Image 1 (spheres, rainbow, N blue to C red):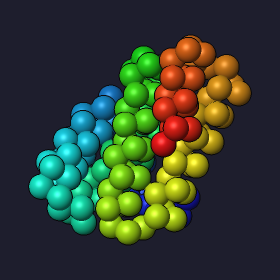
Image 2 (cartoon, helix red, strand yellow):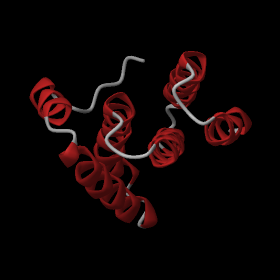
Image 3 (cartoon, rainbow, N blue to C red):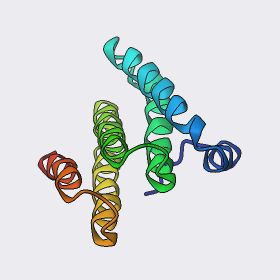
Length: 128
């Protein structure tokens, strides 16, 4: 996927201190939701983009339980794709969905997660 929202400094900081990633994700997700509620899609985009990339870091570091990781990643994916669609960026929204599906399928292939929890989230993304 060609979209990038986190700078390399913030990415490195979150990877080195993953305990902060959950709080950073929640802040970005909540801020994006506030902007989405007022249909301020352009303002929501950087916040939900950061939340999406932070959710991937949470998956990598396994800083919380797997079910919560998958839910954060899936909800961020859907919100980011929805925001991109509202901005008329259909191709980018599709790329976000496919990238997320591939990411979760990778988790499935590694066998590092509860199959049922993972398949619930994958199934939801497939439907989207």
